[in-house]
Length: 114
Length: 114
Image (tube, rainbow over all chains, first blue to last red; front, side, top):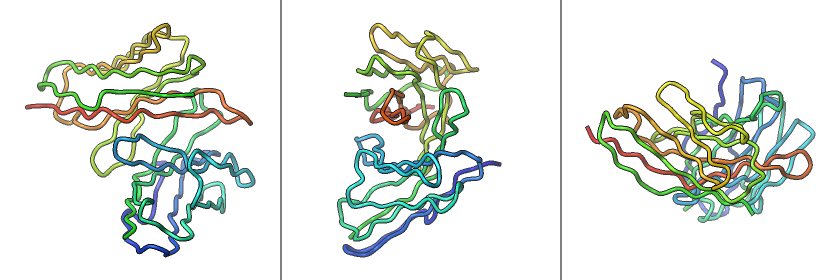
């Protein structure tokens, strides 16, 4: 089945450490996104990418960076993790050719920064 | 700006209908979505509706859109225990540079009582 996968699924780290979260998709979609979910706050967009050479900041990009290594791969980095980056992180994809452009989400990565 | 609001919690008995409500503020929305999130999982697309429609039915799911009141609802007929989850409403609105922003509500937790 065409899918969106994320690694790792869970990660505990310490303040100041560099962390990379990875996302891969087999859906063949051109657009990829990183979202953060905090309890009671819905989802907030961190970065999005329309293709390998097109990367854009979202609503809450400070403290994060991304890399689109290939059409199917989009990674999120925290250069120096801090406790308020503890959250659930989701990768998502969409297809500009699909009417309605719905987002398809990965299973999420639960990140805890101590 | 865009804002999407949902009630936090809904409890129903198995076999009854559930109605989850959502209000949004941006009248320029193009599509509206309903997602389901089960514990430990990502967001699963349930259904979506184009903004010039007022109703969409898909098996046990009925979406009603009142564009004048900026109100969206999701009705689940014959609710089952497997429907217990958090349900997110989201709207897509025009943005800049070809990006159409998707704004999520904070989610409604549906509890189904056997």
